[in-house]
Length: 113
Length: 120
Image (cartoon, rainbow over all chains, first blue to last red; front, side):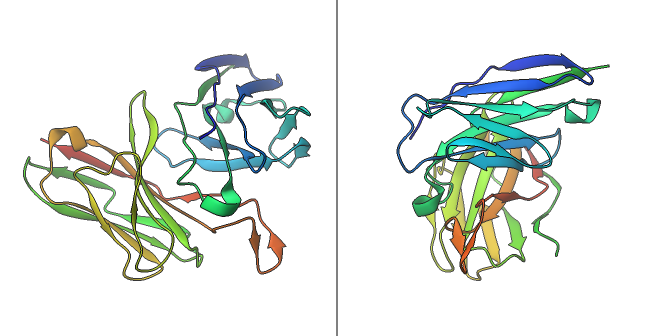
């Protein structure tokens, strides 16, 4: 299993761009990088997934350098409602589903007014 | 579509009692999972299923049993509840791979709302 390391917590003011970096030095060739968001008292929710370079959707961007040993989740202009825990997952979803992926404790993002 | 639903939402048990948590999904997903979440521990996989009639152990399977008699349902059983099983339980489902009927998915995992279980 690819081990991931991400900051335990981050604070940001409303309206700022937030970047959360995840390290995954032993990522395998077939591994994808996926980010989930979890609000209090709710199950995690998928945000974005990528394999290499940059991926963007209506919620966030995911930057993956060429060596794929790290990735950065970018949240543009955060609001108070973005306060949540963000999980970085690395694994081969193609052949094994999520049973080969661990969630870890994530990064707790606190958005400040 | 209801997505992933869990029953019940809350439950209080006494040590030694048994109970079953029900998870249902209406997305025709092959894979289903049961997690527990404890403060400071993230989500830990208890058991999972790769298809109807199949189950397998995850990271923390002891004290739990599961069954998947129908593709849409995944049951988690506690035969003799212990205080250490006090937790929030999440069920989830997903497709088995990125490709499904020729469509490249993100293969995201869909979670239920959770069941808060307290064992006294």
